[in-house]
Image (cartoon, rainbow, N blue to C red; front, side, top):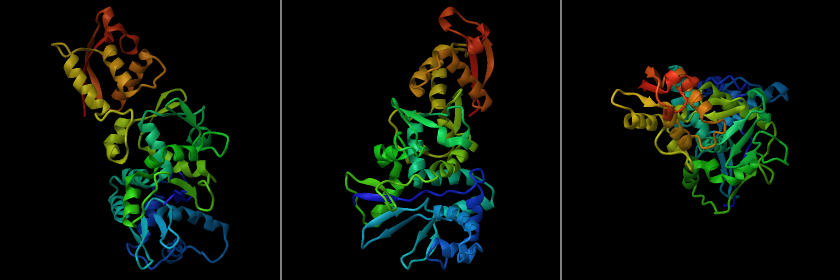
Length: 359
C-alpha cells in the first residue's frame, strides 16, 4: 500500500471539557446495533440526524471516537479517530477494550485522564508527531500567546522551525511533520492493526487526505487545542523561559510508558530523576553535600541540550521546579569554594546542598 488516508481528527468540541468523551462512551453500549456514527448519535445519544440542523455539527466530535475504515476491494485504509470504537465483521460498531477500560476508570473517577492521553498518543498521528518531537528535545515557542491562540505557536526541533497548527502552506506545517516523521506519527499500534488486515506498507508510503493529496488542515488549531490542553492539565508542559514551553519528560514517564510508544534519538533511556539520584550518590562528600552547579551542568548537557538561557538560569529553574513538584527538597546547605560555582538563586550559602529525594 502506497498511502494511508488520514481524516481530520475531531476531538471533544470544548478543548477543556476532557470528560465529554467519557460521557458519550458511557452512553454507548459495548455492542451496538449501529453501522455508522450517525446511527450511534440517533440510537444512543438522542440526536436528530434527519434534520439539517447546524447544532448537529457538535456531533462531529463523535467521529473522533471511531478507529478506521478499510475497504478491501479498493485497498483504501483510512484513519478516522483514536480507536475507541471499531467495526465488527458483520458491520456493527462496538466499543474497543481500551474504551471499556476508559469508561470503567471514569466511573470509578480514577486515572481516566491519563488513559485518555495515552489513547491519543497511541492512535492520533498528529498528536503523536508533536509528542515525538517534544520527547526528542524539541520545544514550543509561544510567541506570547496562550493555548487559546495555538495557531501562533511554533515548534523548534533539530535546527528547524515548524508551524504545526497553521494553515499557511508557505510554512513548515503539520503535513511536513507527517511527511518527515511518518513512521513515528503512525506508531506500532496502527501497524499492528494494518498487519491484522493483511496490509503491507510500501517503503515510500505517505499520509494522504480523505479526498485530497494531503491531509486536510481545516480548523486544525481548534481541534488540536483539545489534546494540547489535556497535556497541559496533566502538567506535561513546563514554561522553561518566557515564551518557551518544553515537555516535562519526568511527568510523562510517570504517567505513561513513553518508551514503549515512541523511539528516542536524543533522550536517554534512564530518566532525569534516576540519573540525578545516581550522580548525587557518586559526587556527594562524606557529609552528604554536593556542589549543585557542576552537578546540574552535567544534567543540562545530557537532558536539555537545546537550553539557551545559560547555566545560572537553568540551575534556578531546575531546582525551583523540582522542589515545587515534590521531587526533592533541600535538607541542608552551606557555602563552598569558588570552584564550586554559583549557588542556587545566586546565594553563596547555597553552593553546597544536601538533597533529599521524595520519589
